[in-house]
Length: 80
Image 1 (cartoon, rainbow, N blue to C red):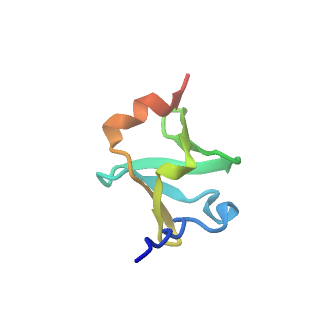
Image 2 (image 1 turned 180 degrees about the horizontal axis):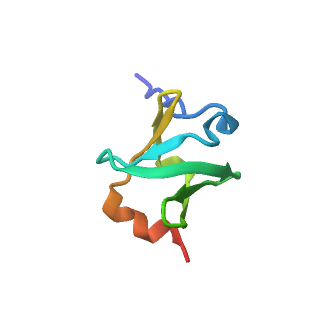
Image 3 (image 1 turned 45 degrees about the horizontal axis):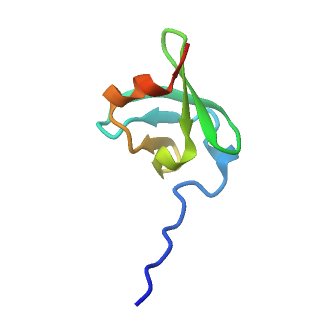
């Protein structure tokens, strides 16, 4: 039996622009300002910005994007 290739969490990346983002532990992070081939740019309150690789997007329910990262892990993706 072959392993099925999982379907990506997002099929149309433009559809997630301006959508809210939550971490795996359900913390609100901000919203997606833009995307490129490899990552999404998240703007958070307090002028914080995060550049997160697309493979960390775990789900999209049509209104919110969910990451597979805990809130405490986000510092490694913060843009200074």
